[in-house]
Image 1 (cartoon, one colour):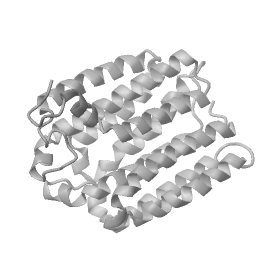
Image 2: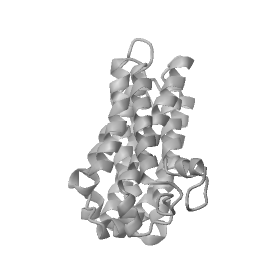
Image 3: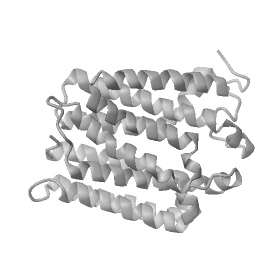
Length: 280
């Protein structure tokens, strides 16, 4: 099936999930599940639940923002290019969020509820929270709840260590500031004034760098005992990402900050896994 823009609708729908961030969050959740000792079958459930939730957030974003994106002629949006219709995005988003709820609750009430906080935060952001000073809330709560939900999926429903939740929330806040940076002017032109818009690009960039650096320090210093060699590597890897985030107040680096944060987050979790940090 093809839409007026000539591109297959299935491909357009995949692009509308915001596949880069969706894949990064899903990979992080899956690696955390492995690090927390979640059995293989339940790890697969975590992967599918998080992937469905992230797809629903991407689709709802492009559905709800279709008129705004058309007004500023966003070239990266399939709905603007006519490759997919808002009604298709709405239907896909509702199916995906329903699937995410079912898959999450199959893990149990506690992990299911925690994982759904991330999805709820994304939908709340898309539905209007992005236009307020509290635009950061969904990111902080959602990305703090994500590791807690994954760890709770392990046998015995363990409680995630404080440092993992704090680092998740800080990385979520940094991701929010960096994700908005490339579109500040377009957002302001269509009436969006979240926290990054109120702070301005330079203050947002500094705050993003501080949050990113702080999250990496917490991941290294939080676990019991002396920092492991993998922990020191986390700090070494964090340096360039923090530098890119700090430069996100300039146009040249605005689009580089968010991918840098996503890559750092994945690497952080890989190093946690290699270093054997106790998550349960």
